[in-house]
Image 1: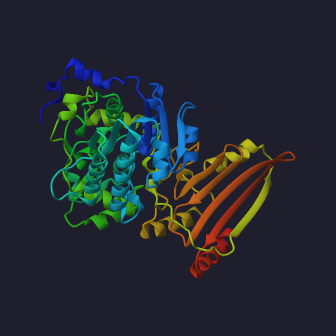
Image 2: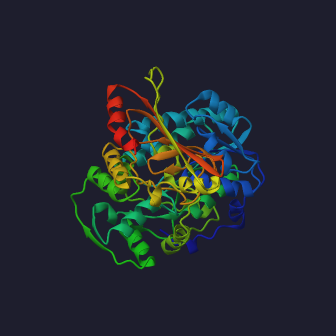
Length: 481
């Protein structure tokens, strides 16, 4: 591959990197890792922005007043027609890797529907971020990423498809894996995939490419492979991370860890639970390096190298804050189950409250900090055990932690829960994403009372089947403390 320095863009090509005034842009996947990072730069450039999400309440507090947030599903024709109406450019960042075994077919159907709806709406361009890799033996995940790009193009709308390998940035799935493995394991028994060639790219460079594509000339379309300044291996990524953190780490390669066992292993020692881990490991067997440097000839973006990418990610990590995290995306948990046609038994509610002689703001402070490194205050070891059991059944367990140790937003992941409602100083409602025989919520409320506050906790469970009642009442002794 030619060096980046040899690929100087012409003045006309360099202009592609500057965002120009244009029509309305539709962003899908804005609650995900990359989409969440893209919202701010689009807004700061004055781009008329509309976001389509299944959870508008999770996004409304994160965007500017000028950004339109609409609720809808890419699988619904009426929702797509409404969302794409008057749109000039559509950015497609939707995937369902964690939704179940049929995610590949689901992603293909959604992309075909989106491409057809975009053509019907007169959209000028679709921009899509897929996965880097080539050859006949692609993993299920990478093959699915390529199929989505082809399905979008099948609609007839000119499409720019970027294919990226490992994305390095605080909060990304790949970063969480590297950070957790290297921080926690002084001696790592590593499978073959740690020596697989890859070309990691910093999240800032991915965002720059997406922004450049929004305003690119009409003739720019097709597949563009994007990567950092140099190809490395996954082992080298971990070694560079360890070097910058001044950690001494040893790797012992073994050939016997299958994708299934590697997925379970990742689920135990990282925030990546087994279902996602297995799909991720399957993809790590494929070499993911840039073979065609057309992106460098077309766009003015000059991606940084591994050392700089990790250094920048550590800045955010050391502040214990990431703008977005992969686990905050809907797709990081199991797809919402349809309960249509199921008649729930009596809803089970366990409510209790106590008076505390402090103002509501102080009473609410430990509630807003719950989960993550702070734990769950009571019987934390039992919560961890429950998380391990959930991992064994391919649930998220407690490994996702929190986006921020102090502050919450609707849509945030908190260990095995999702923030469904949040009113600072007053209300926090969490929806369970663990494997359950029904639906579960945990709600905390703080209200002023006399010279202090009333703190109320409510556990809500909609049981399905006889086992659900066994489950609930089996846990009753722990509720009653």
